[in-house]
Image 1 (cartoon, protein in one colour):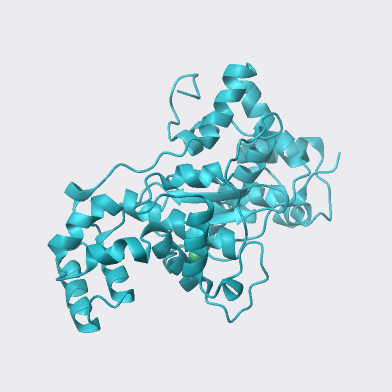
Image 2 (cartoon, helix red, strand yellow):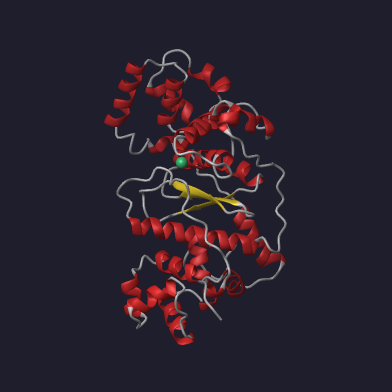
Length: 354
Ligand SMILES: [Zn+2]
């Protein structure tokens, strides 16, 4: 049975292994492994078993027909020092997550009461207009958004908050044709940062994943503008930001709006409520206190806990009676790894779901 060569490449990238290293470990030449990955040669059963065992994936993974999704349009707040191998690993993990969600959704009908309606900023005039109209369309009450992850999930967006093994990336999203959009959010970041990432990616999902985006479009700027208006609608936040602005005032607003002090300051600037000069001064003050790296812990609020994926697993375990091994077989992944990735509990007991 022929293998899906692209999944072999993804599996290798998920382990951050070079062709040379993997080939050596599996007792093959790199020349041969390269041909396997390019679909020019088929591995024998023994060769495939050796590769699977050194990659720590079940060999059945490589027989899956899934077409991997390409790299996302952009990675959110990617630092230059994020290595290519780490980026490829995270991309590969996200591809496996897409495969997992597809398989988990075979037996479950998603109950989405909000519609995800793609919108073009050109047509709407601005990204902020889209955020405003999406809030109205979803009937989000005025003021701060309480549970952003819950909103996204009600629209069928799968949100994965997980430790992605590096601080150098905040998150990203993919939306495979015919499937559900997935957002990956780095659990290493504080809650305000995670919410911004999710709002930003929601903007990409609505505005960019289904549209032909021209090179000239600054999609990052649009996604940030969407996030700002979605989390802090001008009409609601303007009265609260008016008057004298200082760090104490922004710090008091942070837990209310569940956004960072930095976001509030930026918002005040965009809305013309602080002069550029004074904003620069406050920005400098933030930097001097170290708050641009990490805002004061005493203002932290708990991160959001998306539950759609948890529910999907739970349904399989509780309603369909799947064992952990069967879930592993369904997803072509080791149960330990599934637990670590989705539930951040690599060594927990048998129970995958709490
Ligand atoms: Zn982005």
